[in-house]
Length: 199
Image (tube, rainbow, N blue to C red; front, top):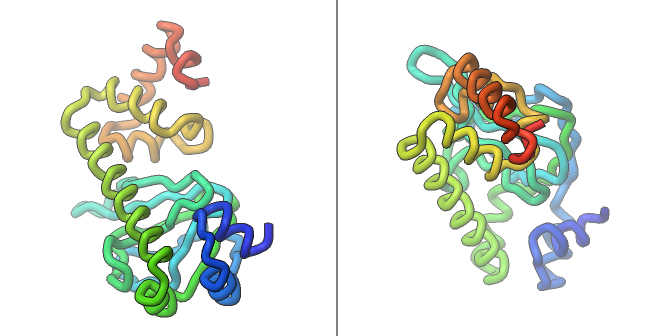
């Protein structure tokens, strides 16, 4: 897919002047499985979007333990490591499989936001989506039992359990791998794992 088509199809942009300028600066990059795109504490110089593949955001806790914070798996998902553009990354971003991303120079995009209302609206939409996702995860972590969290994960991230290791899923859901294995076994024995898109 050519860059102008990406901007039209993935982001719904219609301003041809904006599309042409973004296409002139955009670059498609291939990431190998295990590649760390950004590291916690670094200030990203690029704005990155997933085209295909699977990315994971993670951070280290006080004991140096790797905690999965988020996943990007839908085409067009921003691979953003911080809330405000231009700030140091609050999470590291890793490719969980060979992936393809679209990159744009960050400072240049910030300038375009002032010039193109459509780009600003798109940026605002991504912020709202990120906030909605954040609150859904937070609600699941504090209001659901371990079983309810896993069932929520199966609904919210359909099919992702087949691509992501149990270690990363357990970390994301705030439980041990032993607990996750027990939950999977319980659902499998009840015949509910297949119905939920489980196996």
